[in-house]
Length: 586
Image 1: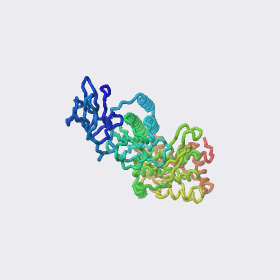
Image 2: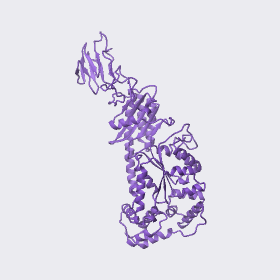
Image 3: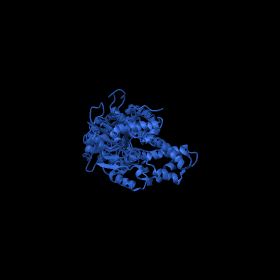
Image 4: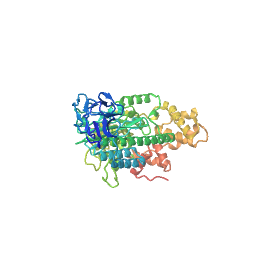
């Protein structure tokens, strides 16, 4: 031992003397150095260091022959001209916990690590997408630590995000250890699997392929946002690797928290301005609605696919969202796709994703909707619009098989619950060979029918009051209906269902000069939407073509108004206009 070189002791492999760790030993536990002509021992351990059986207060002087004790290990100190520092006991390891919580690190980052961290911080400042920010963080961790696999798991039930793993070409069956995730959730501190000196390993199959693992919590604003997993093979992490991961995790958590707060403000602003309903807007106490809510409650706890059937505008997406929120997957993402609004040529790329360079315009990897909905719910609205090719691939995924993104060289498997919806008669579509029979059977394991508004007129007063209350906030005026006007609304057939009712009230309030809506106001808004001409035939596509054409003519080519008449979204109507080659009337 040279007076010019301090001696560090602890369980980290970066120390001069490595102590196989037990519950009493810290990564850097103590240092012995020669200072001002005296030998000194400094304590850095959480459980203290003893000299001749007396616990020292941070620092103590050493003399020849003194005994230094750290945990269950004793050392005999001799002066430099005598035999050096040596161990007098072997370490017992009967009850060593291999997933020790990492104490606060004192390891300093090197120049290259600081440079990499600064580059990540600079890019994080400009980030607007949390998914892209997490992806950058994972790439940085993998590059700097030499890890073979890095991943992210969302732990925020109020803002769930899909699981992310790098490299994305990792084996389908690779999972992020739930054992380590639960540990950091319980203790709120990083967990380091450790080194080869440990006699046992955690009972976790997901950790079997790796020699070392690190799991770090992402905490900010008093909330647990997620967990970072960093795995390595053929070697173990050094202290500097762990310190770098801790530093990056801290900044990433802060950046994610800032983005979350920003999104919450934007969402609140949108909510105040928006006319969109939420899952709590399944209003009404009619027998039909009571039965609907009962069906949702029973189906929500199951893992089977659900087929929601109902006319346009009845609230099928609200039913799907209610299923998700009441299910065990409510902590995962709820991803919505309107199958009618995406061209069939792009549907495969949207559902299953693609790799950079897979086709012209694919400038970066794009996770498909199945990956985005991992461990959550994927809602496929207007499922009847899927092409035959996409129907076949969807069937494979529902049956538990993996899928391959466009341009990828390996398969991916997602844990997703499928909820589909349609306003079509899929049984008739099967008979006419427009929809696969096997897919139809797989989708309707659980079937939920949403009642049209005309079958529950007793719910209309509740709906009217709900929409008028929202309009009162947005328009800063209180409007009410006369009893005669309300009776007229209850007698109306409502081909566009709740969506049409809401749009009619909005138009009526906007065009009315008074705060009382009477029968005449309602009649003026309802009359233009009556469609009385006879369709050319009962062929489904001809019926659709006729209805779209008729609605556009009645509204002078106004797509928004025509969509209200038809009880469908503007995106869906645009798709059908293009499909049938209809010229809008200006």
